[in-house]
Length: 173
Image (cartoon, rainbow, N blue to C red; front, top):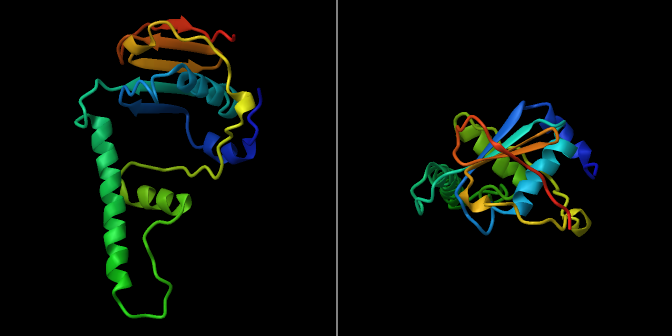
C-alpha cells in the first residue's frame, strides 16, 4: 500500500539511515498490534524499507529515561512560555507572542534548544480508516521489549540488545 502523502516524507527519508524509538511500555498506546503495524507500514511504504526499531523501557512510573526526555521537552516549552510572558508585559506595538503556537514553531524550539535533537514537523499524517488493517493480535506482545521492522521482515525481542529476534508477521483477518 503506497504512502498517500509521500511528498511530505521525501526530505525526512533522506535525513536518516534508521529510526530508534524509545517509549514506556504503555499497553494502551504503544505496545499494540496497530502501533507495530504502523512502524512496518512506515518502513516499507514511506521510508525506503529503512530499519525502524521500537524499544520499550521497563515501567518506572515516571522515572524512566523516556520520562526524563519528556520532562526536558516540557521544561523547554515552559521556559518559552515564561519568556513570552515577560515579553507580553512590555508595552509595544509588536504582536503579542504566546510561545510556540504551531508544530513548526515547536519543532524549531526543540531542534534549537535540545542538544543532539532534531525534530521533524509532519504537516499531516494519513489517518484514513481504510488503511487501518484488521489484524490478529501479536503473540506475547506484552512480554517483548524491542520490535524491528526492516524491508519485509519484522522481529520481536524479549530484551533490547538481544542478538536474535523472533520473526513475526501480521495476519490480516
